[in-house]
Length: 78
Image 1 (cartoon, helix red, strand yellow):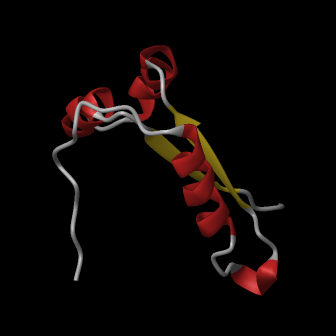
Image 2 (spheres, one colour; image 1 turned 30 degrees about the horizontal axis):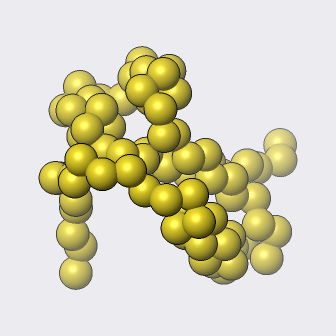
């Protein structure tokens, strides 16, 4: 089942919870166990503003209203 969050609480997310999220995500399986994934947690309006040019217009309100936005980046060698 696929669910998409489209509403968010106006409440900060504690740093220790973000750390736990990162630690759990970092243990996810990857191709040949290479762990090429990086996670960038955006928690300030200024950080999220830098992401805006890369977003589809329909995603802007969700990113702006969320307490935290996570960029998931997969790094691959050429």
